[in-house]
Image 1 (tube, rainbow, N blue to C red):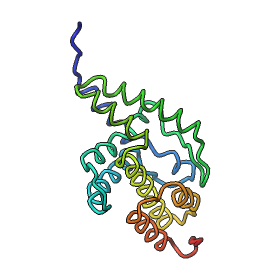
Image 2: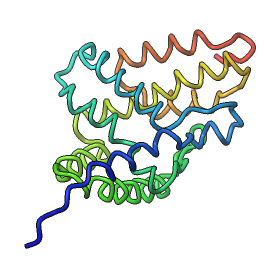
Image 3: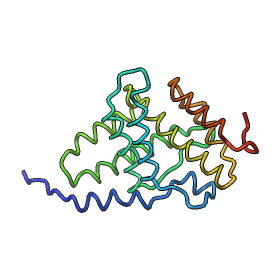
Image 4: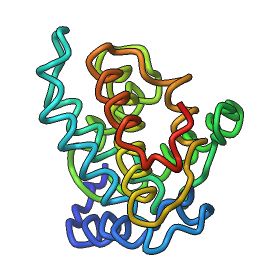
Length: 194
């Protein structure tokens, strides 16, 4: 059996593409200088690091931080595909996106050791069944709402549909829901709907 060639240079070059991949939802809203996938993942990771101890349930913080760093890496292969508009989630499109992104993650990690660990973690994350996976998706959407607030404040955008979708589909944890409501209260008055 041939030994796997380890290529960290290729791996980190591929991962680095996420720094230049703009988030499609913001591009579609014509946000000036929209964030990259890497910028989004960074703040999700910081949220996982800081907030996971405050949720009142035992969670594996290291696993949550890894999910944050891993969750959108497949997009460097597939691009950032939007699967939700406001309250409507296209489940079929989301499942197809996750399958393609999983293949992208497998390709990216194929050049280094430890690929199996990241593959298992990706499956757990998209399965949304473990406590960490359930909380992770709330962190992911809460970060998006922080970003929406910043764009509303800085650029006068009305990004209500982002708030509605998150309120309805994602905020389940009481502590994170409270943070979400604090963000909503800070929305510019001319934009606030609730």
